[in-house]
Image 1 (cartoon, rainbow, N blue to C red):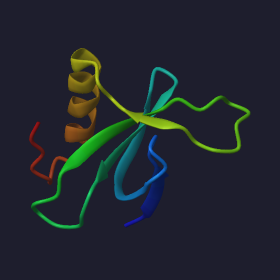
Image 2 (image 1 turned 90 degrees about the horizontal axis):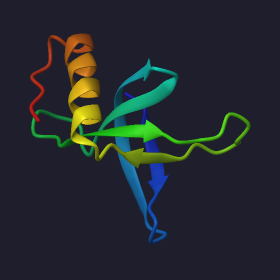
Image 3 (image 1 turned 30 degrees about the horizontal axis):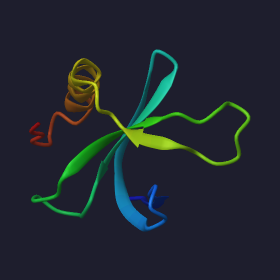
Length: 85
């Protein structure tokens, strides 16, 4: 499983495991977790990068409707994993 490092707004670094990736309506979303195992906390990140940008820019999905829609896609993709919101 791929592990990626994110730099937070305060300058600190946080590492997440990439569980899955999808593209919906031209937007890339990542399903990431804070640890490897059954008790991991998962987050959905949205790619806000410009097409010509060399660095990716992600933010956590905050909009409830968007979060529900993307969650359902990931849930279908990972039908053998018990996801909870």
